[in-house]
Length: 388
Image 1 (tube, rainbow, N blue to C red):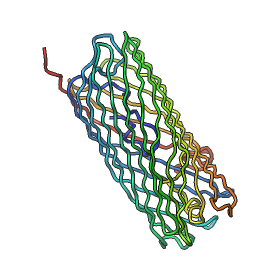
Image 2 (image 1 turned 180 degrees about the horizontal axis):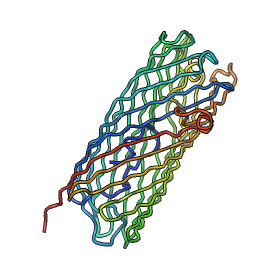
Image 3 (image 1 turned 135 degrees about the vertical axis):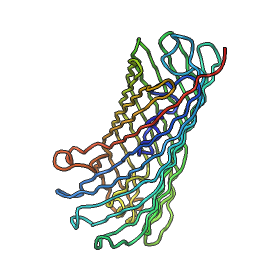
Image 4 (image 1 turned 45 degrees about the vertical axis):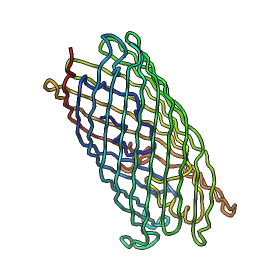
């Protein structure tokens, strides 16, 4: 069970084909719980703020089977593997502005996350395996919004959805203490934002690929990987007062670069990974700000460019043969440049500098942005494969 499925950020890249800690040999099942946050923060005027976040609570279930390569070959990835994982759970949305400093727009709501992952790896030669992977991460929520009125007096409803589907097929080659992999990737990033004053929906496909390398030196494992997908998405937008539809094709790009180090000591193993995520998307459908509600109702089109740093730690301890406990930790922070343009040319272009953090803390913490957080744990049970 990895942080790829329990992150609150739908569009951040996940570990689709790679694995941080190797699964135990044989058949295994795992189950656990995770809490995560994703947040966006904007200062519309000096001394005021507009903050929005979404907070899922996941139940984790996974099962699979793995067979390790010959002794000394590769760097921890099984030569044969099948793995199914599911992360489901409710979520809570919360958005607020400094009272009466700007538009006094606030929102609160509930939703759900439905995340799935499947990995198949099959050895074709003594050193090489073909591998395929599928991941779908999805969130939908229904929010109640108060626009410009007294607090707790709700004026309309909003329905949000965010989805990222990844499909990959690649090849993994192994040598003594080293392995490398390459894959072709298809990604479908979709989002929608529906209120009484505006409607945005985006769909489409982007293509790209990924590269990965792993090396093992005794108890240590080094890891590096990168991926990039790009293409265009179909965008449909409407807004008050006449709700005339606008259809455009907009550029989209998703990139992720990671380095990591693993350490095994006795019955304990650890994996620390740093990642840099960069996305360009023509929509906003998670942790929507009150400032954006007003802009979308006025007819603005969004283009979001996001840069996020993520730090993951996974620790695992074997208490009894075949029984392991796993701890998952993630912290992330970054910034987002949101460009708002009016397709009719009547409104001036606006640029919002948004922090991907800032829900917790004040003063220096608020100025720099407190990081997003993910915390999870799981238990892992395994049985050896039968055979000679």
